[in-house]
Length: 315
Image (cartoon, rainbow, N blue to C red; front, top):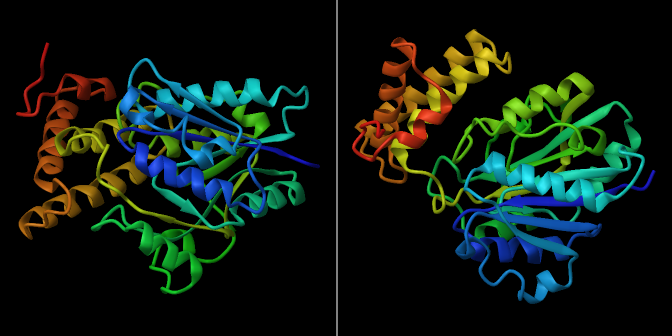
């Protein structure tokens, strides 16, 4: 079966990084049939429609009415589903790349092969050979060195155990069969950075088939800090979003306690160590505010939108 491949990119404050991703997509051994980029304001997509490499790709540049990874990804999904324009919903793939993800040139080729060879495969995520999200981040030069083999891969959970079935895909690089992508949408109750929207979407997708890590789909996640929500709001979402996903059964209570506890301990440790690579004090304050709301029975993901930078809830 020949799949049409549509790449969806939700971007915020990273027009330059998205232009580089366009370059990487144009170099794929299996070029995408279409690329949908969704920003939320003009600066998010500045220069993309005139970018030389972007002009060589079939692309659509759109604006969402409000910022939010879930909202923007859903607009991309709607556009890709219409673009596919096929009666057989299994004959296309929706691929999600973060704007700061750098795929190996064979990522899309190997992805399509995997879906062709395994009819029960509903979604996959690739091997992240370097992830800067919890450190200083990586440069474009770093990414090139990792992808060429000039630098050894960094340890990452996607590398544990080779190709294998999993229950959650990594949102910076993941793909879904059209039968799921046409029907499921990301939960827009998870606002802004939409922390763990990939976990929730994966869980719902897994009811339709198998999810796996495919090590042949390699890439580098730069982990650029620009464009992310504030540390305070992100810390609040680290607790509130997980609590909400428990009610949806997208994560177990035990898993939620382990996952949230690990994040809180990391935020505390990095605050005490004066780690300035991220706003860890802000994240910790956000964690504590969310716990307070949780114990008072008033926690919900949307409350983060009312959270001022001083920690007060705006009316």
